[in-house]
Image 1 (cartoon, one colour):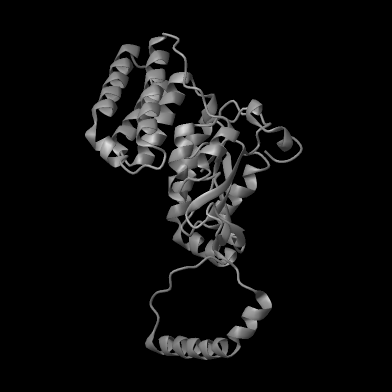
Image 2 (cartoon, rainbow, N blue to C red):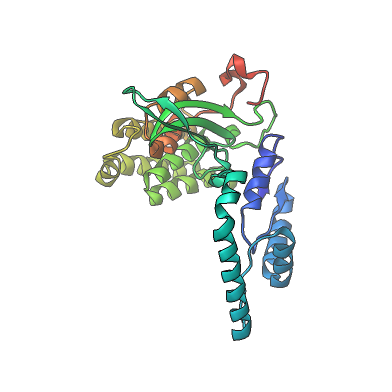
Length: 313
């Protein structure tokens, strides 16, 4: 389900994700609230039509499940498989020499480079984003890995010059602070409070609720986060730093409270892209998503580098 109108940089990324989705599958684009119900109903009908799904799979070359194969057909398939296997064993090395090796996901072959200790190790170029769970919308981080350590990082936002007023980054202050806190909580692995933060966000956006009730809920969530021994235990080996993650959660929830109460408190300062890159360099690859969630970069034109103005950003 594609919500909104993707820009020229994000559009091919969505096509790539769609190509990797197995059957049964359905794709729809929603550009307005009045289209939601009809799009969901059409998706249910498409997913329920197994004959059409099978035909689409054959057309697009997608794998399908084969059942009810007779013993004779099984023997024929087995003979054909053995025959093909023998042919491949005979000519496999020849094909490898001509075609070269392709890495999964289209990754490039590793380069060589010195690490911080002066040792020459493989360097692998990997792009994080823009489609990842608990990830800022449109963010791409190109990293160079040596082992599981990030040696270089360069961040950018896709379609930065487009005016998208419905982007998550354009949410009201309280909703955005709760959304950002929910990302951090989810990546830490504390799903319950993460879902509660998202529920409060949705209540502010879509429900006509009493502000005092939301304020009480936010205060209760703040107290739970501040007092939780479980959260501190879960962060005991966090690469982003336990104290920094806890302080970030406190700031985000306090910002949400101030916005709900209309107190006008200062919102936490978002980390710009060069600062985010600096935080990522030297960190373990597994911690990258949590570091990004804590930094919470925003896609503002003022955050772009001068060198990026001539190309994609």
